[in-house]
Amino acid sequence: MADVREDGSSIDFELEVPLVIVGGGACGLVAGLAAMSRGIETVILERDDTPRGSTFMSSGFVPAANTRFQKAAGVQDSPEQMAEDIARKNGHESDPAIVKALAEASGKVIEWLADEHNIPFELVEGFLYPGHTSMRMHCTPRRTGEELMACLLNAAEKAELPILTEARVTTLHIDKEKRVHGISYQRPDGNIETIGCKNLLLACNGYGGNPELIGQHIPKMKSALYYGHEGNQGEAILWGKALNASLKDLAAYQGHGSLAWPHQTLISWAVMMQGGVQLNLHGQRFSNEHGGYSEQAAKVLSQPEGVAFNVFDERIHEQCLQFEDYRNAHAAGAVKVFQSIDDMAKKLQLPSADVHQVFDEIRTLQTNGTADRFGRTFPAVQELVPPYHVIKVTGALFHTQGGLEILANGRVLDERGERLPNLFAAGGAARGVSGAGDSGYLSGNGLLSAVVMGALAGQAVAESR
Ligand SMILES: Cc1cc2nc3c(=O)[nH]c(=O)nc-3n(C[C@H](O)[C@H](O)[C@H](O)COP(=O)(O)OP(=O)(O)OC[C@H]3O[C@@H](n4cnc5c(N)ncnc54)[C@H](O)[C@@H]3O)c2cc1C
Image 1 (cartoon, rainbow, N blue to C red):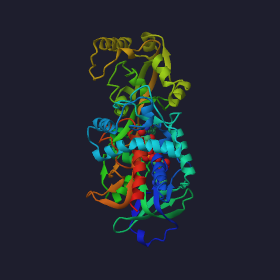
Image 2: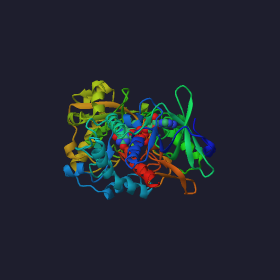
Image 3: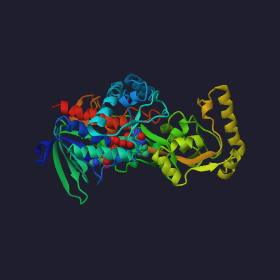
Image 4: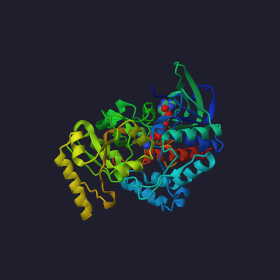
């Protein structure tokens, strides 16, 4: 279903536009808005009947530095600090030029979307996500990707940005120089239609929904639950391979170690950052929960039965009620409440002595101000007190982070490091800034690549005229 044909210069395309974008998630929509606002006629092709993508399923938190929302809240931040946080988390494995470009543009893109396109961004306050040295997550009031998508689709409609739905792009038509002249897309009835383009932007995310590619590139997550959009089948890297494009960091992914089980609802990592801990079925902690939620997926999955208990208290519960996903999990009965450690251990069938030992150790660490064997410290203000709240969780694969190697303006490179003539990629279709594995993902790297690189790529297409 994903091929490249060297027949581009001979096809009489039904319609030709300066920019075709494959995929109508956050990346495609923001790129389209950026290109249209610079006078570039654009068409987005989306395989689903309603554009949703992984963006719709996400929490919709977009990191950005130096925004007026931060300034209003008295938060000190800078693009340099943000770039440093991203690079530290990925062990300096990402392209520094891309990290710099994203961090520098992030604040401007968020403000542009707020001012020009009425996206009601606000700053998420109250806690820091792991690895961030400043509060810089921006989201819409309901704090859901569903709302972010609704706002972006509204903006697209106002900007008269055409989105052709039920149009699954299957084929790129190129010439000898690898210039894309147009694409073919398939309709639900099987009909194939074509459209010509001067530039093509791949915004069709990664390959999380393609078990074969996951088995090939991320074997340890092959049997993990995939919690992203099923339609993300990896066409960008399949087309890229056929074009001899450079593919980077294909083993990189964002996992999440806190998906309520069996409810399958995302439990915010704020639970851990505010003082919660994870216990396995032996009643023992097994990791530094402040390392990052992405790498925690594999750690949870390697525990007995691939599950863990998030243990926290009323204080954290109250704070988490601000998240719609958490409220849904709570309403679905995922949050169990216990009056004491013994009560919790008995009802969850955990060895009581081991659970007591965990709490004793945390108390000692709090008193001494020292780190545990995993490297986590426990500030006294975050002491867990009864009644204890517990959610059973598992680890899941959220999205892949590797993909087409790009320049800081979204242009795709080939294996020799040369630019392909008119191919751009951004969001999950392109290599992200999360290094080569699962531990380089800094919260927000997904939408950072989608929203901010989407804007940069849309702008670059306009400038390439
Ligand atoms: C549960 C969850 C929570 C998350 N929370 C956050 C968060 O808070 N912050 C953050 O930064 N990241 C988060 N992420 C990651 C984030 O959702 C993604 O990184 C981001 O949405 C990617 O955007 P995108 O536009 O590249 O892809 P998508 O939003 O997935 O859009 C891609 C679109 O392309 C379409 N498509 C695919 N193939 C084709 C084709 N051949 N032809 C036509 N259309 C095609 C798809 O149908 C889809 O609509 C989360 C992910 C999940 C799963």
